Amino acid sequence: MKKFILRLATLTLFALTISSASALAQSVVTGGLKAPTRIILTPEGSLIVSETGTGNNDGRISIIDKNGNRRTLVDGLPSGINLDGGEGDPSGPTGIALRGRTIYVLIGAGDSVLPGSVQGSLVPNPQPSSPIFSSLLEVRLDSSPEFSAGNFTLTSDDYDALNEGITLKPENPSGQKIRVNVLANFKSFSEEPRPDFPANVRNSNPFGLALNKDKLYMTDASQNTLREIDIATGEHHLLARFAPKPNPLPFGPPVVDAVPDNVRVFGKQLLVTYLTGFPFASGLAEVRKINLANNSQTTFISGLTTAIDVIPVKGANGENQFYTLEISTDLLTGQPGRIQFFSSASAAPVLVAGGLIGPTGFAFDEENGDLYVAELFTGLIKKVHVGQ
Image (tube, rainbow, N blue to C red; front, side, top):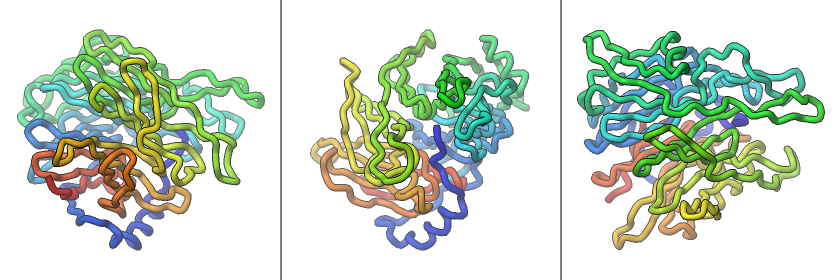
């Protein structure tokens, strides 16, 4: 995925200047996370967070209780420095889903590719720091997440074993064990020859994950695709490909990538958020609807700028309403992100919260009317009370 994240210092500066624009108050639930990327709510009201790490194979899955206390469930997950776009950013655990005591964890691009000899080109990395980047892990805990002993850690030897199809049973310092296996392994890159560089490749970057019955759905933010994965077998196939869009700005390439970064189940349909690539034109991003009956796709919510997540909710009369999350309102000038509310897919948006520093995922607690937001750059989980 082409770079869509600007430096923390720039975003922080703008956040300080516009934080008063937030429509609702924000509170910090917990901090000190290692680049939190996705966040889900357990049936008991705890939060499970994927942390992409620092690029040193230190990705992590944490659980946060209702009092904001964090515990490590699994540490040592693959995390490498992604040089796609020229600047090195950590890439590790991304999308997560939960069923019972099993957590499904997407592992992103990591350092699977390197810059080529021509500007903007990429080549395969002959020695990536992990062989299981661009994969889906199935982690079976020793008990439900709230009661799991936690503190399980994977090693580089474990990566090799997992890559060979071996199911691991890592043990924590107290002697408890969990089960870990690679449910699906995706190609780390695809060939994309250029006239000036025939060896060019396009990397993969699994980023969004949703669970529905016996299927998982995964968006690849670099390949611009949506895949369906069978939970029982790990077999996967392409459901949709997202075409580039014309660039409306007078600079940048003639077309920009869609960059599908998350997926949500919406009845018998899926909602996929677009980020769109450089130059990140305002109003070009959207929420796209995928009909599972025939895999057709249509624009659902338009006019967004850097959409990175969406949550469908039910209104007081059972009507479908939506919260959207954007990582920035203007990436080129370093503006922070926001949450907006739509009383219907075609309604005008209402600002819920602004001044968010690199938000990459959120979750909604229907019982308490709280939105929880993961901020990649600050390592914070924030809460915004939106009512019930």
